Length: 322
Image 1 (spheres, rainbow, N blue to C red):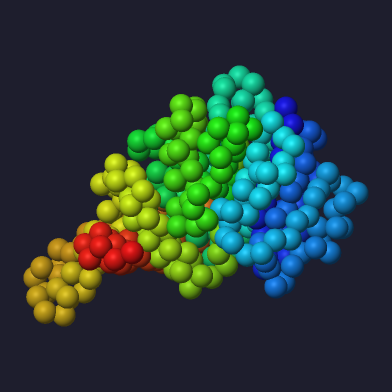
Image 2 (image 1 turned 90 degrees about the vertical axis):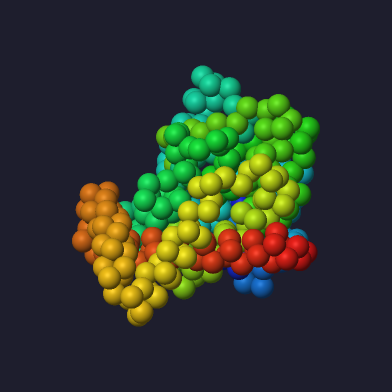
């Protein structure tokens, strides 16, 4: 089995250096790497060239069109039996490709996704962001989980599709705003088998600050409405949870300002919820600092997603704006 690893890149030369370094340590060697520079001003050409003697690697520069279409650009030039997509802010364990290869030989999948985790080298903020995006006490609990709700949708930070999928379904038709979910829905509708490979994890750095994390999750909330506009049946009750949490927290603030008896009850439930996050994160990360920061990151994850979700729900569904 030959893999084509496709990495879209936009103004992140340092990230691609770290990612490529992890690929030099793969235990399974039947793969190529295609780096698609999507119109970056701060390009990584020189960095990629350093790996010419270490990897079967190709570098392409194209006009900016977004990450979805950058991946399509890579698909068109890939030689592999399987196309593996990584985000540039990922670190790849040495046994990743060997794990995927062995799983695919035993369990046929036309497309797959894998979970993400925090690496020991991550900063406390990166670890707590990773916790918020994977925690059972946030919506992260339904991502990269074998017991997911409904049909499993691989996410593009760690996703693979067979050449047969590409030849029949084509590539991404959205370049962002939920493009990976839309793509996996079309793969499923064309009769292909999609599944999670639980052991095929990557270490996903995501964002390095809470402000960047807020912007990313606000965008994710908007993306869910974009998916709904294409596939109405894909909007589930669980997707409303961040918006409900956000409205509930706003209601709690109002109660504290104007009606103390009800505020006591609301404050109690908020306290219990944050304590559950704190102790669960402490047990996972073995760090009091990360556990405390996990309260902040989980709050940001829910409110940013909730506000983005409500923003586009009102604009695009209620008011029917394009």
